[in-house]
Length: 103
Image (cartoon, rainbow, N blue to C red; front, side, top):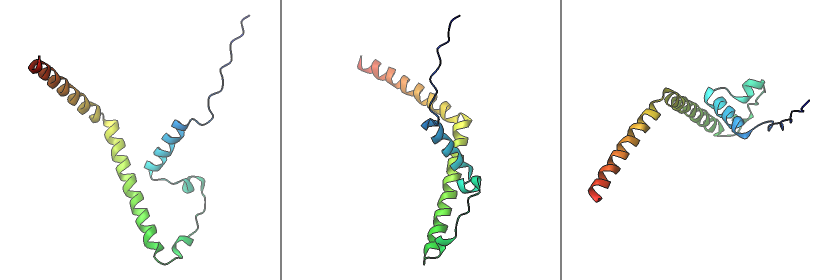
């Protein structure tokens, strides 16, 4: 009988998968404390003016999530690839025209 060579185990947490998962988590609007039910203290509002910084940070976070979701929808719709192919086709036509003028 032949012995099959054993495959080396893959990396336990490939960085590309971790980054993708973190990006999905960020765009979903759900935070890590919510997922793991970690209690977050409210001591950030204890300092003067920190409440406005927290509110500003939260609004920026919501804006980031909104824009991320829009970008994901645009990517998944296929419109980018379609426009990219149109641009590439136009570029190749103009290169052919330029070669005809130069040649």
